[in-house]
Length: 334
Figure 1 (cartoon, one colour):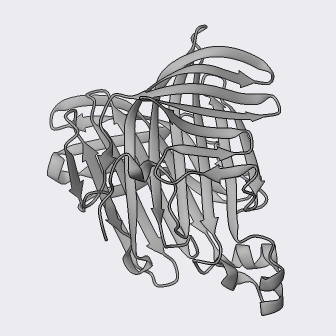
Figure 2 (figure 1 turned 90 degrees about the horizontal axis):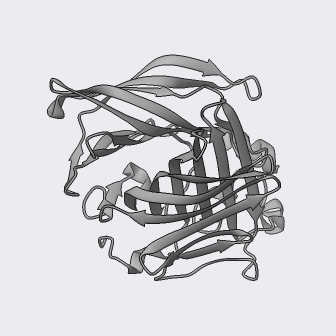
């Protein structure tokens, strides 16, 4: 498997699963703190096992999509503890959804992510919720694993890079009220010929006050019981170190009143090789994504505190917890 190359690999790839994922923390002129998430999903149902969840060949023939394209987004008012999620689904409709190869240009309906010279522009607008943001990276791309290739066990390998420090400015709209905002964002771009069935994972993007960035990933295949866990650390100079010895310890839980799912919303993370101990706590518990057309998952803004050796550090993070149960898909689409 070859490595990730720029700028060619910023664009779309002919694979089973691919996404462009953004999160960030923003502050408005009146001092209100927000966070946001925006993800473009591109899933080819013919390349993976997703069609296998349908009960008969007849049902599979009638399934309307070859490549599913969707956008998930939210704005979180961290000051007032209000969560505004949005879900948009498309089929493989080239007139209104496209992602160009070899170029950063993803355009799904009204949702957009593109590279313009040395800046990225992202846009989301649905109802009274919207944001238009301009992003410029302070660090070179971070290629996790071996040159941007990480192991997914029996699922196969995955291409994966991040832009971990994106200076961000623009406008944000909640309930029809628009504010100017500034802050810092994170981009993940990941793709490969694997699917999400049977998978359960916990993932963190962490930006520390000393300019260190961490990506921590715990993955379990619930069918084979295979487990994978590692941490990637990107220093101020962009040098990447991958560690397998990572402890992720849940501390507090929250049960969703809507889906009845139980999520850990507070963690202790220990990296013994770096003498690092971090506490990650959700700003507030209720940050669940509950699109009725896909399994629910948690996507929440968090605070970070801890120590590296004897030195104290602080920061912010995003926490994602997902459990893509094949039985849910079978019930939904049969």
